[in-house]
Amino acid sequence: MSLSKQDVKKAADLARIEVTDQEAGDALGPLEKVFVLIEEMQQLDTENVEPMAHAQDISTRLRDDIVTEKDQRETLQASAPAVEKGLFLVPKVID
Amino acid sequence: MEWEIVIGIETHVQLSTESKIFSGASTDFGAMPNAHACEVDLALPGVLPVLNKDAVEKAIRFGVATQATINQRSIFARKNYFYPDLPKGYQISQMEIPVVEGGTIKFHVAESEKTVNLTRAHLEEDAGKSLHEDFIDMSGIDLNRAGTPLLEIVSEPEMRSSDEAVEYAKTLHSLVRWIGICDGNMQEGNFRCDANVSVRRKGDKTLGTRREIKNLNSFKFLQQAIEYEARWQIEQIEDGLAIVQATVLFDPDSGETRLMRTKEDAHDYRYFPDPDLLPLVIDDDWLKTTRASLPELPKSKARRYQDDLELSGPDVASLVSSLEAATYFEATLNHFDVSGIKPAAKSIANWMNGELTASLNRSQKDFSQCPISPETLSVLIKRVLDNTLSTKLARLVFEELWSGDSTVDDIILKKGFKQMSDSGEIESFVSQVIEQHPQQVADFKAGKEKALNSLVGQVMKLTKGKANPTQVNEILKSKLS
Image (cartoon, rainbow over all chains, first blue to last red; front, top):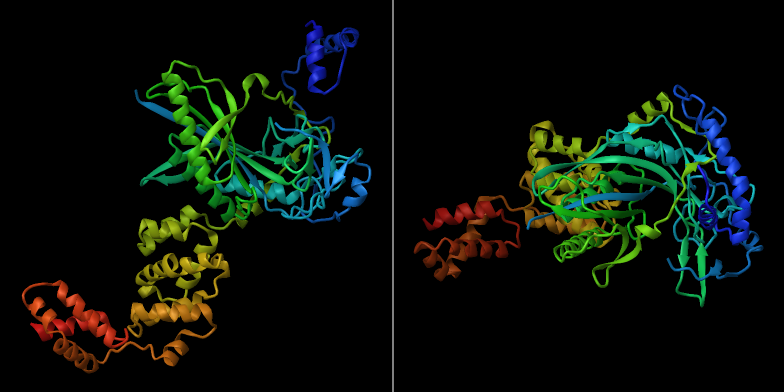
């Protein structure tokens, strides 16, 4: 499949990456190569292969339901750009 | 033109764990902002999620209770979107293989039984909260709720009225509390419904275009929102307009739904398996022990109460409305012999659904916190059944029991509540009343049956409620005939 500049811009937008027209054009070439690679992989016969959700064929570890974390608000908010009344402040968002 | 409403419901059930689904931070409600937000919840660099075993256990309990399929191997996925109360930039959820698939919820609407099939139930984490009001040009972010475990339960679009939708939601609400997986506090957002609503002409086979009403946190709002939305859609179509797939919000003040976003600007979530989490595997032993640990379900109890104890439908419905009520009922019933079990059961149901529920509601308690123990209630009922107490006196004893820690028999003794059963004593009161109320006596003799009630009332008044009204009735009738 061939990729358009518009596709690159859409992907960048979804990932909140700002790209100029020039950058979107520049990214086309390298990204096309990824698609070529995918096309190559799709030619493999995977008819009888179970899809894996993870590269390692093991299952997840579970933890017991115990509260192990203490209130560290002050430490954790020390690096925040803006804090008030214990809340993180961010530019106004209304959905 | 006859229209049919089609409703499917997605419910976010907050699982009642101590700690979060992927971190060891507390899930307690009402803490200072961000006091329960640890490094994992804040998505600081280098942190990794570790799954809470109890959240999985609770999902299994739900699957077992609804006769669903438990996927013994399920997968966590990232649902990608940007919002400040979601610090990672994605929510960990389940997409391709959820932990629970299928299952059914059964309930009654207007005497007929309805079965709604479930599509799936999957584990996911909740987001934080954004506060928009208190700051100029800024939003405040509280991440205490971020990472709280949720089970999202998705129904098939099989409900056909707002009544059915509400009954489905109530049944689900009662079930998740019954099996101990959710506290069910709707004010605190423990149980939130999204309703997918569409309309079509009766008889049509294809579904109409749906609109999704988000975040309904009360049964009343669920009902109002669906009714408004269905009416609105019908009017649109009758005016020749098409319904556009959209997400809407319900405004309780105006009683209307308003547009939030249409399909064009719907999120493109780009789900993919979360590389931070390996597949969740549930082995046979875990399934077996969880299955064995479930309490008897409301439906099965209801059937027993109806078949074995011959209780009425409404009585049974309220007794199995919560596990606490059913447990209290059975604990009380255990104090009676098998021979007199049916009248005892009816009596317990009457007390529980009457005085007890009223008093518990007044003091905002449930049956597990009832100040009157099942044993004490059983003694009170026995004193009525053996005619020591009239129903009226029993209510007075009940009030004493509620406010103090005395026993039934002590109260009867102390207050002189013992019912008069000596017919000679009652007869003298009856004679007195007949003498003092010649008019009523004449009325009764002239055929006015109601006059007798008034005379019985006078005798009861004179005996301060201690006479047995049935006995008074008989004596009066024999004296006046």
